[in-house]
Length: 446
Image (tube, rainbow, N blue to C red; front, side):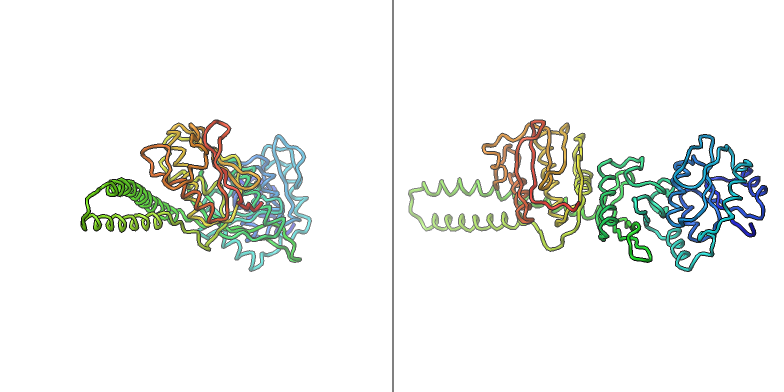
């Protein structure tokens, strides 16, 4: 076998020593399941050996990821529950140094493999990136399985060989399914996804994710390459600024609303005065000027910026970001469907925040909010007392309120945001008898 090199996954100690002693003219290197594929980019290997069962992974998944990088790499898997595998040969043995495993490896290394050649400069550059870059970077194969991953955010052993839908973690199923659908867009259509904002509940981080097609030497898409940059600090600063701005907006609108009411009363009383005096004319002019000032305050406060900076937004990320920064108490949130759409980020978050705050205001802290998709957009529904206004569309009128302690401008702002984005917002009854707001005209990127 000459100077053959065997890469052993997840083993060390006496078994490895005995295994190497039993081999003829071969050296052994060991690596953890999550970094095996990175090692292959740096080390010439004649055979990969792995137990079927690994801590936090399976040998077959690790071998599948390795084979995607080096399709002709010989693979030997072993275990007492050995069954036929889709990759490599399987040996019924409980230990690495079992004679049956040794024989299988010696037979495997006799074949020529591209993994046994010295790594190219490009491969060593790739290995250096994945070993040291301070960001979550990953490569996935044609099926969306993780082939390479850095250890910046998550242990690669939890990812290698798995698609996002197969991961057993704390992320909602709908979120993992949405990530997988993004993968399919890149792999099946050759699209580039750039700077999609995501929120990971498991790690409590905000990410800016980009994915590009991984093309082979003939230009065919064979997978994808992705990069996640953490933007948690930036997002929290933005959230604090938005919260402050919204408080100021609501204070201004409520103050203007109360001033307008008082001015209407004062003006009415003035009209009933029968005394003729230049002083009364001055008061009337002052009332007129105050009315103009109030109108200006309302006009400025209800302005919502929906400029040209439109980004790809994930529905679940927007909703969860708002949920985490809103005092929702014991309210419950269910996201039934997810997807990516293009919109102006700040105004979209304000729309979602206002509807959730409306559910809290009317339904209380025990209210449940449900978010999902429709054929023409998305909806936010609650199980509170519902809308009592007749017709229900009155809730979108400026100054209208069903309670005495509300400014009556929140849902008007929702209407304005939807209209400025080219959407339509419709209010109705939810399946639970509460309020439901449908935002129609939203184009999801499936």
